[in-house]
Image (cartoon, rainbow, N blue to C red; front, side, top):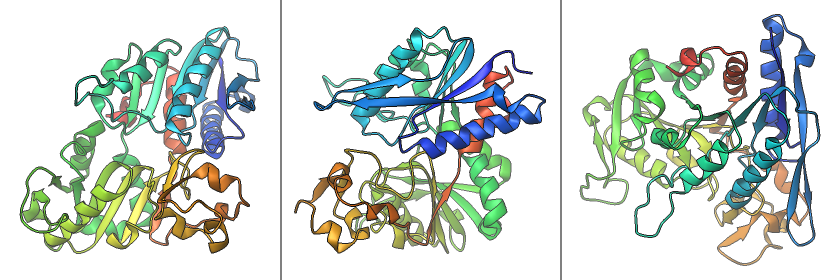
Length: 376
């Protein structure tokens, strides 16, 4: 069935290793299902050598010649390292006689920087697109922050919608949530993004939107209006957002829909950054559902800044050894013994695995099948 083998490139030492391995397995299962062989889908190692001065050198260890190479980029990296490693690996792929090069970016760093707001600011998302255009034939991400980002690319670049996957998960695991549901966008772009509104309408749910611009009196949560508030009283609300950086917008949205008469409030976040940890937000929702494009449970990425909220989850013997500052870096914790790896998510925070959705899309791309069935 396959004209060319598929080589899935993953850093086995990175925090995305489990994600990458599961994507590889998902592609492999589909190849076998359609008459191929397991060995037609290879797992290729990306090794990263670090030097004493902080420089690093990535190297793809396996053969890439005449293969469809799929690079799973680690979204847990510090944004600066994320960008640099992306550029270096892309350059390494250029000279490898590859048939097709597909970049898979679980979470697209710098996607919020798609439109400069002040003089002398860069369009950082466009710079990311440039280095991808230079080295790859196709690109793939999920629930990208702004659909217009795809206009920066000279290659086919796909952003998978999230709502069909979320709905399938809820239908299987939490069907009662769907019985009395209103889907609320965390802002006015949340439902436009990646055809979310189209998919929500297909399932027949009412829609409302948090209006961050329409102010009324009261505290911060109450100062947000809700467009479509008349649909909320007595209903369960699913607050939808593509990413949670600190969780502030989610908290404000939760207050707004509760003021509008919501019965139970749930949240969905595709990319769970939560740089201030979960303690800040967990009590505002009945359940918070998070995608696993960024490793959970975690305060993610070497060098990522961690706030005092996140440190509450760590034992006192760890916290007492950290600098007495409002912010510390994860590297400070990595130098200590690693009981932080046993840090657990709050009981009402649930992760949803997205590897199979990526595996399906990559299989379709590598076998020249249409993506319309899973995007439209």
